Image (tube, rainbow over all chains, first blue to last red; front, top):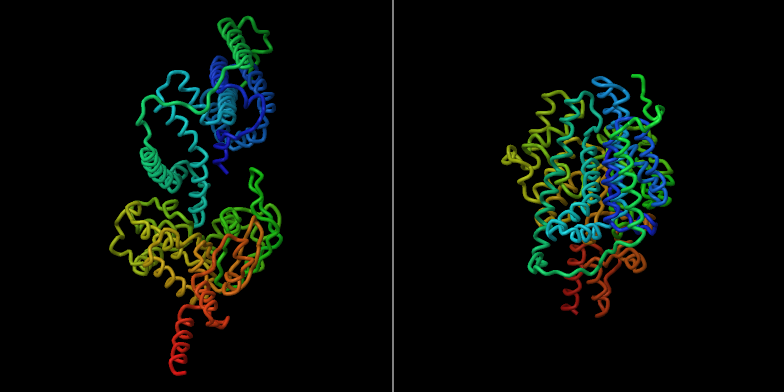
Length: 255
Length: 277
């Protein structure tokens, strides 16, 4: 189903090295990979960056989840390749797809391995006000709920003859209304319910709040982030002067 | 009419929702699927129109394997009315909502308009026909969701928790509708937690537990069976508890009396006899 890619952002509790890293170091990881992906438009360097992600995905035991969500987005990738081939070049299309793949993979590693509660704590430790940190983590907490609801809506509409696949771009856009309208309405309703539930539990009544759990930046986090920063610095140096690279790394599709 | 043969279903995340389900549902039958939350009831009904495809096993509809039928074609024969009506209402008006359900049915424009009009009258929506479905009350929205499936006139009607969140009057309206569909020889499947409702109005019950069928039989037997009631997180229907109470004080009510009006008749004749003697 087309909504499966949302699974790439659903936290699952597991006991692996990747899961046990501090959320902040994983946030830095996701950001550094995003920046690295944006540094290059050459296919080979992007491929190399993408391949460096795979060991982390395997160590974190989330390969299947990741792979499924990537295949769920294949339609989008195809669209990017086609549009780019028509207007720019095939090579650029592939590079863009790789870029998006890297960014999505990096952030999906982040969201798959960071408990939403830890996420809020890590934001607070970065001096983000509690209300904002809380709503941020709440938003991620609701991703699986909304994806389940979206599936229910698709099922309900299909049960009365709605067809997911339609011909023509205009029909496809029109076809989204029966799914989006109920989804948006029920999300808004849920937002009000959650707000009321929070207020009835005296949310925000006390300025000085304490936390039950705490997070710690351990030595392995320092090692992990320093390796990442070193890589980023190397990438930036290479970007500033592409002459450092052997010519085969700059190879591109002839189209 | 519907036959499920050796059905197993496993969700993509690995949870096994159905194990070795074998079931036959005859045409015109009315049955309820009951059992605790997570027993696999909702998964089971989603197999009936192809929303989910079994991991192994075959679903037959009129002796035909439905595995190569599309959801769209199955949905004209099996209408599933989901729990939350807000999951399907999206149009600007009540009228449009019903029209949307008919658009995929290969009808001419005049046939669609005629059907819309009939449905509006039948479900008492004429007054609201230009109102937005989003502003309807919970009960009205549920009724509209039902109407938007019923207008397609499917052979099999599947209701997921139809009495949930409904007030007494709305439940009565639903029961009346159920009775009239029963008279039309429609096959009716109801997923419900409402024991009183199932006991009084549904002849056959399928009890599920952890993806398996625990029991299949007449509601008067199943819902009064001590073992099953304990094992499927149920409680006795009020009328049966009342009969047990009567038994304790020495009034033995015959087993075949199950409905409320039968018990009233029995008790009035019993009291009459007591006074006379």
